[in-house]
Image 1 (tube, rainbow, N blue to C red):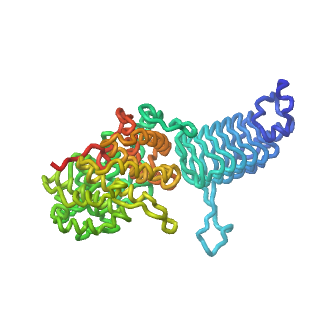
Image 2 (image 1 turned 60 degrees about the horizontal axis):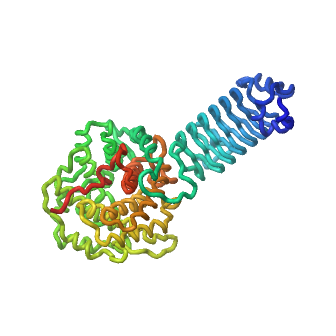
Image 3 (image 1 turned 135 degrees about the vertical axis):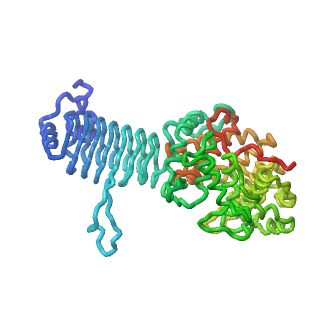
Length: 559
């Protein structure tokens, strides 16, 4: 040992055992401890490993690989396997079945709980009920921060980082950076991190991680579908997230649109069978697409809390289109809707205060008009709808809803109005290639709304809220150059943040940090990424393009 390490004594080695590699020969006491541990039944202790005298190793079975270290104050219980070159810092606790790979770093006071108490029997004390153990697996090259808790059943993928104080309750994909209670994805290490407090930039090259993100999703989008594949009876289908409702009609349509983004068809059935399956859900009398969990209603046009009654036209109608087909039956209730009836339905919407559900109703009606026009030759343009839209827009804000004052715990501000603007404009102005009135006022409101919510950096960060600002800014930006630099700056910063929400092999969650990644979140967020990239002039060359609900080109015109 050189003079540099003259102060490296046994006391220091107890708490910083990684220095042991600079010592040629262990002390007699340490060699004796090593021999004693290696001689225990079920123990396999590599000769080059280091275990501090102050570590409490009482595992039932124990394996530690070459050059791995366990510092003083650690409590090693259960069935433990540690690979090569891994380190457990002072105070780490293992319980139950825990497997740690090579080159892992476990910081002080982390607790790895590879077992759990049952507590379902209310007549028995929890301490008297049985233990279960699914086990914890920590792959190679993982860094777990101080005071982290990992619960039973968790698998942490290779090359991941768990931030200090996190509580890990679900599997972690490789290359993830996780933090919080419960832990959520902060970013994917393979996607470059933005500079701290970056000055927003615009123009080509402003999102350096976009190409890398595109390479990842183009290689793994099929894994997202496979993760959500289920078999019900003898028929294969999809759920939105693993464990979800297999009867829901939307996941199949979302899977079809995701696959279509990459020029493919879901592998669960031939294209013709998928078309027949969706067409079978259309009521031939009304033309509505029926959610078989709740059944049909006689008048699906009447606004109600049953969102599918109107959203079904979008979800099923567009899924059929991207498969190269369309609805089998005319949507009769829309085709036969008189001017008087339509005006009454529109006037009955609480557009000022419930702008989102009102906008979604208009979106559904406009989409049904479109489907009848393109697939059944209808010439119905519903002039009463366009007159109502022109009359009801608030000229000073460009919205169809109002800014809402706080009520109790609810402080929506422009949220309802902007989200309603997206749905309303998507199914009418965007779909039929018609300019939105007062675009400058609309842009001012959307930008003000984004600032009020800090662009959903931490609060209400879900697919709807982000889509509902990105798409309007894209749509309005086709009409005017008003505040174009402002738009590009915020979109560049927003896009960089969204790219970090992708979970490898699982896709996007609908609500980041709360929901499990799934099909709805993936379809919507991929569309957000493309639209944002298109605003920045960076969408050309991406391996995916939104199809169906979130396609950008107008579907038809009113001529």
